[in-house]
Amino acid sequence: MSFEINGKTYETDEEGYLADLADWNPEIAGHMAKEDDCDLSENHWEVINFLREYYDQYQIAPAVRVLTKAIGKKLGKDKGNSKYLYELFPYGPAKQACKYAGLPKPTGCV
Amino acid sequence: MSEPTVKRFMYINRRAPYGTVYSVEGLEVALIGAAFEQDVCMAFIDDGVYQLKKDQDTSATGIKNFSPAYRALGDYDVTRLYVEGESLQARGLTEDDLMALTYEDEDDDWAEKPSIRLVSREELSGLIDQQDVILHF
Image (spheres, each protein chain N blue to C red):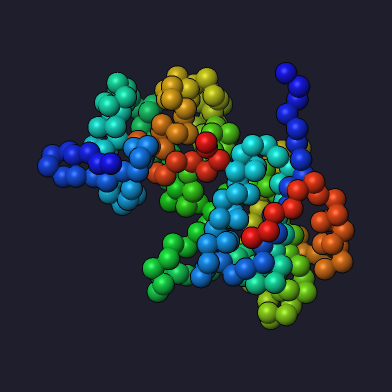
């Protein structure tokens, strides 16, 4: 599968995750979000940027439980809980946010 | 609904990290077991001890260096990484040659503690006996 932004084609896997992490740019996140009828707010970006940093450091996309805990540690308890994260990313915070961030599907996600 | 069953899983790694996919797949499966909140530990024997070697550099091979992912194990509550002393010694390695992997102990005010535990072959055999599920990579 693939999609196009400004004349450039980006390859994805069959579930829409970006094939090459290095292709990522913020426009891609915006494009994917639009496809899901989701407007990216500052709060969304906070999570997306967090995931990119996490991947940079650990080379894996974290499972939702791990993401929740890590967000709580970094951004505070009011954000490190499933309710907050599911409101931002109703398709599953790890799955949907990882996709927008250009990461592979999280480890431990079925 | 009844409480989910938690089993004791041990993932035994005996191969060098690169050249085959066993190590990276083994780590991935261990993370999946942990994501499903099982009681997960890992053991490193034979060439498997090389997986925990610090300062891995794969740039000349074109293969992704996945060793930073071992540092995420603590976040997944995988806090026991048993390394067989005899295997280390046979390869001229000591604990100082391994990554300093740690976890934060929730029951001890999030104190940072080492995840790597050096064990003898005999101790490891006792630990294997205590598991419900053993997976080899």
